[in-house]
Length: 92
Image 1 (cartoon, helix red, strand yellow):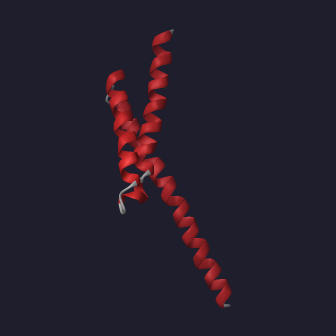
Image 2 (cartoon, rainbow, N blue to C red):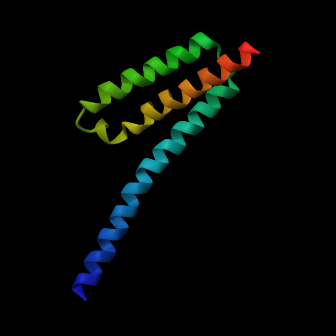
Image 3 (cartoon, rainbow, N blue to C red):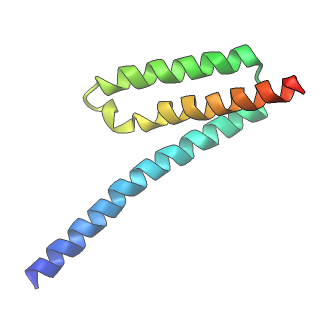
């Protein structure tokens, strides 16, 4: 019986840890969607990507902020995708 309780608690804890990464990706995606509604220029998107990458590097070395490192990295990734979409939009 004790083993079942330990496994159930461990499983719930692991599910919560997996959802933490999912929530940070969703929050970052929502932030980039809001930035897309602001109709930023190409150079402003580049600045957003650079700030996201620098914040990711700085957060890796911070003891408490290390747990939230997916937020700026996902903003940088989604911003890079927006730059690609904007670049293909101007080519045609």
